[in-house]
Image 1: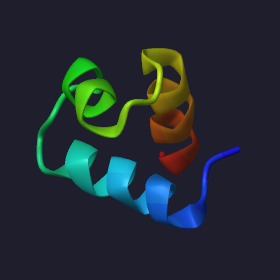
Image 2: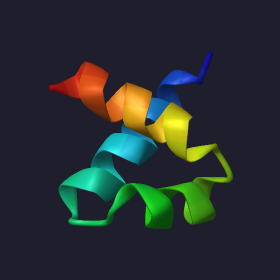
Image 3: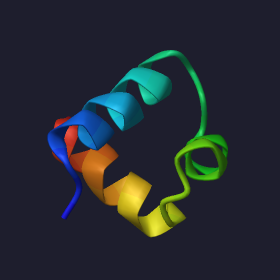
Image 4: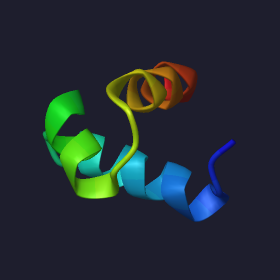
Length: 42
């Protein structure tokens, strides 16, 4: 489970136009985790 601040960071990076792989590199989370939280956002 991610902290709320991590969720917001992922969401902000995605909204800036970064793709899942780039967000994964920046945050250190696995791509599947990033994808799960991006899908939950929509």
